[in-house]
Image (tube, rainbow over all chains, first blue to last red; front, top):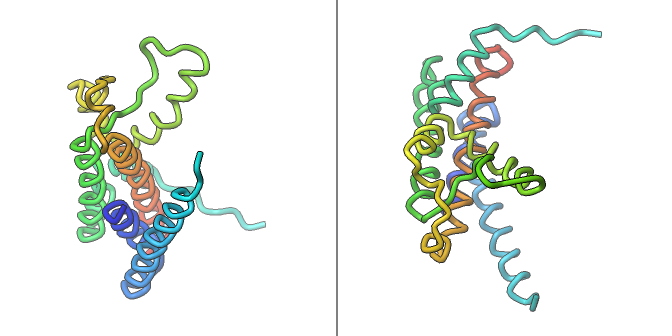
Amino acid sequence: MTAFAMAAAIVFGTVAKDTSNERLVYGLKVFAEFLLVGLLLGWILYFIPF
Amino acid sequence: MESEAKAPAQAWLLSTAGWLIPGAGHLLQGKFVRGLLLAAVVWFCFIAGLLMGGHMFSVGGNDQGASTLLQLAPMVANLGSGILYIVCWFAGIGFSDDPMLAARATYEYGNTFLLIAGLLNYLAMLDAFDISAGRKT
């Protein structure tokens, strides 16, 4: 999941925004969001019995 | 109403090159860091997917009716990897329905990585197109 989040964040950060600083911030934000959403979904699905 | 300028033929060529060889669309425009970064990510996802025992999708063979349609969307995603997909298709790598591979714990992760490699390359391809067409700096 971390590898996937990193790969997606690098590409999203590279193709979006205009300046290097904005790209870096956006990439880190996307990386954190992927991890957070992945963990949240994982815990939600853990408690669903079917 | 103002209409958008028509994209030059060069933009189409560069984006096609970017699709065929991941990163090439940017490298040919002199965007070396961006091109190498995008190529590295696509290659990483693709090779990781294969090593995890992932399976690539193709339409044809014994599939009929709705089964063909279900294969189409993931095939389009896989096809985004360009030459990586084409070479594997000709070499028969990653296309076999091997129950031993499907039983591996990493099988679905592998599938996902292979799909993501293609989809991310589509994004890179569109970025190369936009840069070449002057829609992006």
